[in-house]
Length: 224
Image (cartoon, rainbow, N blue to C red; front, side):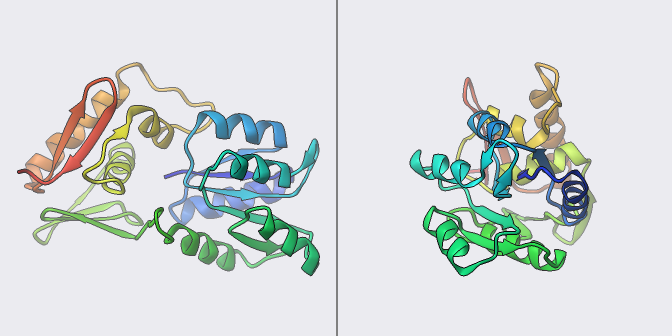
C-alpha cells in the first residue's frame, strides 16, 4: 500500500512523509499538477493527499481528471483554502475529504485511516486468511499463536496479496507497492520475493497458497 502526496512545500512535505512512514503508510511525493497526473497514469496508489495551490495550476484539475476517468481512488484535499465555498467546491469536484492547513497530524492520520476503511478499499490493520493473521502495523505474522516477523519487502508483498485475497493481483500493481518513485527492481525481483514468501508461509504452516497466474500476476487463497 502506497500513498501519493501532491504538495509543493518541501518542509511540510518532508514532515508529512516522515510522519506517515512511522504510521505504516509509505508515501511518494510529487510537487505539481503535471507530475501528479503523470504518476497517477502509470502507478497504483491507495490514496492521494492533494494540495490545491500548486505551482503549475489548481490541484482541483487533478481531482477533475481522476473523476472524469471514473477513478475511485480516495482523495483527501489538504489546503490553506478553508472557506465554506472552497470546501463545497472541492467536495463537489469529487474530494472524499477536505482538511485545512494548519492541521493536527493525528487528525490527518485518522482521516486517512477512515477513508481507507471505506469499501471497496477497506484496509484494516489485521488481515486474516486460513490459520494466519497479519498485522499491517507491526508487520508481524501470527500462525496458531506463533509469531513471525517478515522482512520489509515480503511483508509489503503479503499485505498487497491479502488485501485482494482470492483475486489475482497484477504484477504491475505489486511492483508499484514494492518500489517507490525512482526505485527499480531487477527483472526477476517479484519472483524472488514471492518464492521467499511462499517458503516462509509453508514453514509457518500458515494454511495459505500463493498461485502464479502466468502473464498476469499472483493470488493468495486457502488450499482447496
